[in-house]
Image (cartoon, rainbow, N blue to C red; front, side, top):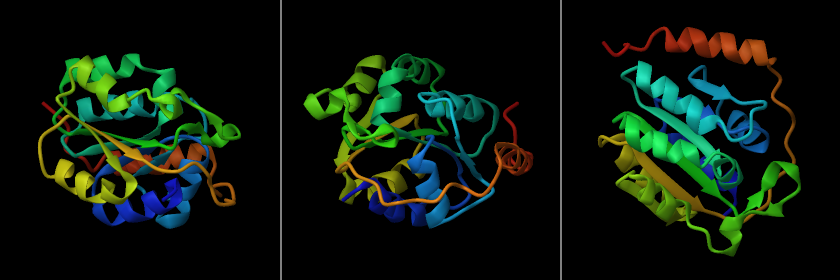
Length: 189
């Protein structure tokens, strides 16, 4: 299973949740599978999907899912301890671990050599941190959406991406429509 098939498998589990999607191919793939006003497609800022998603989960009551890549999380490991300390019950960090920097040419990441992001997350203090094969990720995501978090799911898949066309929305259009969707969310007191 590759990232595109993984995203296809988890999309049916995502209904009204807010999604922050990692830059490059993951955002293009999610957009092509199912576009939604509740999806924020990152067009830059590698390594910050988890931080943006955590910030949103601190402000609203609805579930927030950050779909991130192993390379991006490795670039911002500090976010894992922040997620643990903030302890947002409505936050899920969903890491697509294909062992490569998929948007820049499939150069190998440290996870291809044995680094476990689930173990790092657990060591940072996130109790609900699991690594699953891509084929089990949708069931794990469904379970995590239904239970208080924070959660970290590391879904292991093979590297590789299908040819994608760029998202036909400007960064301002993505921001504005997501902002309008977030306005419908109940804020935390």
